[in-house]
Amino acid sequence: MDNYPYIIASLPDLALDFEKHDFDYDFVRENIFFSLSQEDRRLVEWLEQGFVDENLTEDFYRSCRRCGNRFIREYFAFDWLLRTEKVAYLERRESGEDFEEKEALRKAFVTPDILRREQAVCNVLWDKIENLVMLDVFNINVILAFLAKFHIIARWNRLDRVTGRKLFDDFVQEIDETYDKNKIEF
Image (cartoon, rainbow, N blue to C red; front, side, top):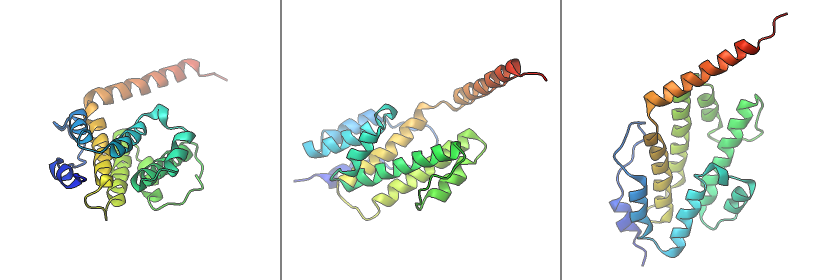
């Protein structure tokens, strides 16, 4: 018997407010993981493989398209679109892809403040995750969506805004100084 109702009822409420939370992703994940069947554990592991940038190869996305789980297929299909759109924006070209969230992503990408830009992209991803499970109630997709959203929060929890801003400002300053030193006079 699946114990999805019990697992889902025990999950903390999540909100994407970009503030520090006391939630520990690993602790919550482990509690969920050991309550799942072996098949569901494999889906959690698959989802988490996609949280590691080095794993996001064409082979990974291809295997996601063939996955029997709808959430995995649709989540990583969107992840591919998001990344493709980001690259197209950075290269100042059109991606050629047409999808519902494209305009929201394009608006996020043009946000001048890098912190606000990342928050806007995360908001689009968060909304997509919620839409993917809108009609799901007590199944593995709800748990996978929870973990995907929790991963976003965990990422923001690892960031220290003051340190992050200082590192970014130092990086920009270093680029400016390098550019000034290498500037060719005519």
